[in-house]
Image (cartoon, rainbow, N blue to C red; front, side, top):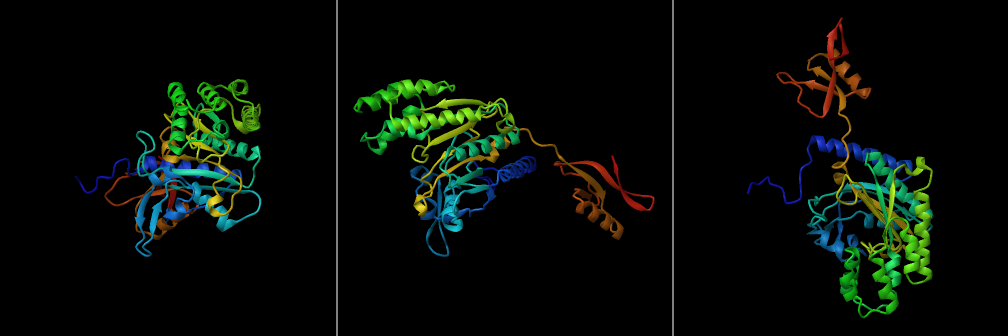
Length: 391
């Protein structure tokens, strides 16, 4: 095997794709800033016990582990940035009231999380801490939606669910973690037969409610169907009421705020991240992609392990995946200039660059070879001075 062959599911990013990703990164971070989100840059690795605090087994299995040559302690390469941002909010900022933070950086996964995925996603996300009301959920969903729209994603569909629905149905049901995982797997795959077998010993109300969830997905009418099909409890009623409120605001007439042509689906059986989310969760899809382009929701317990358990809601996406489904921006216009060993030429080139122009110098014996720049003008010596003229 060649020494320069990269590991499976890891790849170099070449100029065209790198330009596309970087332009998206700048545009989307500017979108977050327009909502008042402050940029943070957590480290790529941390002490393992800090990095995995409260994250559960799934993130543990996704985390690369190594030994710190300075201290001898175990380190981990981050597989998700959200716990780090929660630590920053809890320990370093420790602000009162609302804190809005955003980030963008690489994460490392021991295994790809979906077919054909990279093991080095470039994760961009935003987190809002300190507000328990639905206004925070709506703001984060709106930001996620505008992020995808700013990138040029067509025909966005928002899938809404709520971790409290399944949690309420299972309240008081004594099962171990393995059975709980099987229940969630059967719900996610809409496998009524498997769910029927798994819940055979469950209390009647819980079993009936869980089996009803298998068919409770589709358009927003599902919320009304759920009120009739699920047991009557204050927790379930609150979850359905909050989903109804969000649907009304996300699908409202104010297209300047939420955009036109956005479709909303409800899936009360989708409990992915059930050990993580504490309330409303969402995923955003497009026909241009085979998987969700953005995921998020409410996870109020994320800061508890850091000694500051306060409301939290956020979302994240993989910029590399996003770049693969939206059109690249046009190449940057540039000026082609012959290399000349002369003071006036150097001054002219420096002045152009200070004005924000890109000047590509043609070194002696070479033609222009930078494919990611569109040289539509040239620097020439004319009438005793250096001037720019179109090709």
